[in-house]
Length: 205
Image (tube, rainbow, N blue to C red; front, side, top):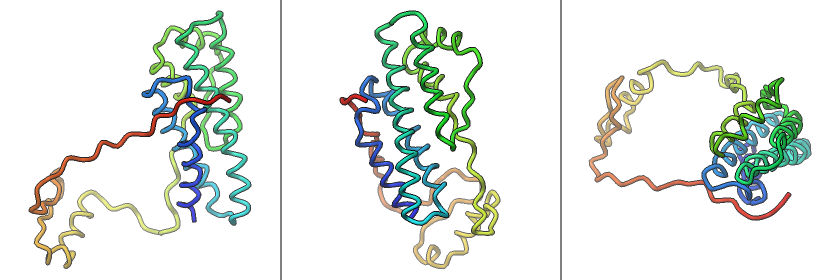
């Protein structure tokens, strides 16, 4: 159920080109990745809700998340064209106003927005985006209390594999604890696929 909610809200972000249409691909991908992380955390907030309650909550929160992302997009995109002095500071304030409505964010808006805005004006887009997102962080997720189990100590996962009868019967080699080498399958290695976030372009708020 939770994974289905995550899939649904992720699709909303990945198919909405208006979220990043003022950015170059690198910055657009970074903003989308940030948005996906926030969306996932919003879904985790619905773990105790029924479907109707979760849908109502996520519809409201995703609207606020998209508003925040569009304002970040416009701020970063405006750097390529310059503008009146203080314009970036105003856009930055609007970003913080929108982000304040997202309860999963640890918002740390600076007191001296005017000075921060002037500093951002002189930055390249990638650095400017990083600076803005640094104020909109996700707090560390609480540990999973449902399983009642502690995470394995270093080496325990390898030790468990070594005792797995199916693995032993397969003839695969298990790396010793502390080894960085993956198990050998005896098959030729294949190059990993190049995974990229879809480019987002076009559309307006």
